[in-house]
Length: 172
Image (cartoon, rainbow, N blue to C red; front, side, top):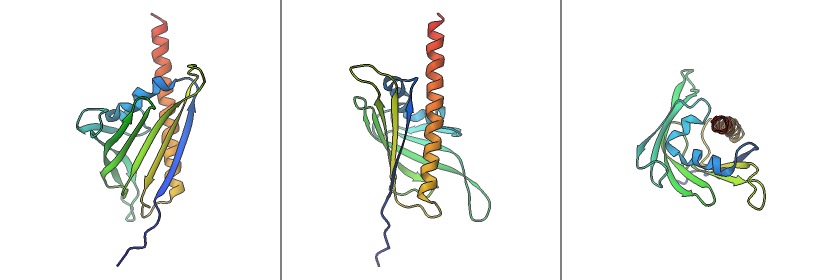
């Protein structure tokens, strides 16, 4: 008997950074094992297989509370494999290998797009897209809002860190 198959959920969120270049932001995303430095409220993220930033490496992330039907929240976790990295176009892609969030066939891509022409790097846009089978108990719009919130928080933390680094270098 064939299951009634819904189309995959697909979406993309983006944010513009005006105080950080694509060249400054790219290494922060390519540091695959250290997402906890940038993602809001993510207390745990570390490598469990392979070399950080190389295709095939796997990270473990945990820390978000998941509501449950019985009222007892649990902590979410996932293992995620880096499936592509392109330092020229500044793209990483990863998939969820295993999780307790209900995500199946999850693939995500992050692209850092420079702003400006003729070598003038006047900021950048971070584009984060995902594709996943519909998740029972979730609504696509709520998932997109979580991505928007997460990306906005990441962008702010990244820009703040770059500003601090630049200010520290200027004082020497």
